[in-house]
Image 1 (cartoon, helix red, strand yellow):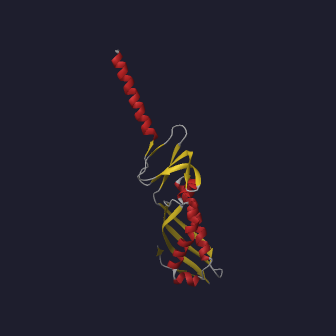
Image 2 (spheres, rainbow, N blue to C red):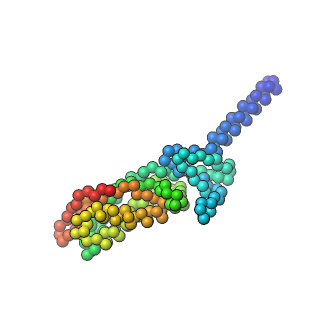
Image 3 (cartoon, rainbow, N blue to C red):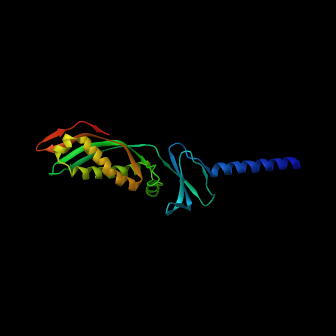
Length: 200
């Protein structure tokens, strides 16, 4: 083997190594992905975080050995749940189905809450927290309404749940995209009164 061949092989090896290193350290989020690069402190407003994040259309390099990459999906997540025996003003129990979609918040003020609360968790774990929170908010709103108020205007109930849940979900870094309330049943004396679907 000639010296030129050895030199050529070394150059090729070096170029291939640089390319692989570049591909490994160059971070480009896919569509609807939030990439969190942890390991170094970064200033966000008046707070220092132990990570930085990038999303659609952004690119970055991570430092080898000191920074790690995690991915969070920004896709809409569907949910459905049944709220059972939710007591209304006056003590009458009600039951209803809730369904819709939610996402990780894209609001810069709330996205850190999502990162710090859900980084490393599965979609099913995030959905469980969301669903339990939504059920709790719904019960709280129902406790302020009489059966007659709910049956007369269940769109008002839906909007009230959205308004009340916004504060709760902003703390979690989540956003409700849409909410539909169906199969509302209120025990009124011995009869169940059903309402139509109330989408929003």
